[in-house]
Length: 169
Image 1: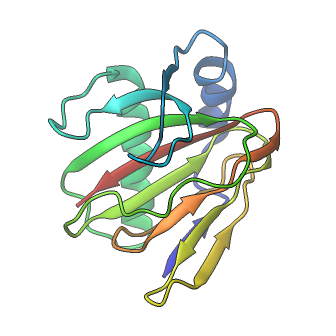
Image 2: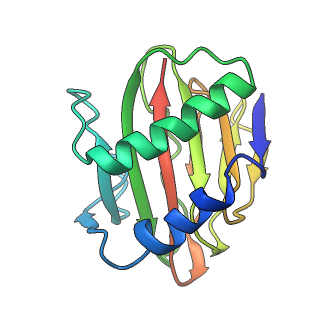
């Protein structure tokens, strides 16, 4: 089941995203592929390191962890430990990212669209490889799902797509 929530953030949190996170002062680093072996580069700002769970961006990590915890509480999802977190910035490219699962053990996904994007949906797949949900981008829309579901993203048509991604168990 995919949960979408367009009313998770307060006005102050929206302003913080607009005026701080998306200000142009937040560094993003280029990586050659978002999923190993796919060849689709993206820019990332790591909040919580995937392998060590070390917090690399304390202010932003705390901010987005608070939002993910609120989402988990609202929808009665257990949230005990954060496994990874990043801000992902994608731009127009052909195709889509590789279909993947973030971890090979039980977890949950929390994603939050940070900007207005022209395209850049998230596709979530069922057990037979069929798309069971398409989550269209809308600024400040949060969504989450059980992390064992394969998923991928499409790239924006123009401009950039910036999304926060946190996984937890």
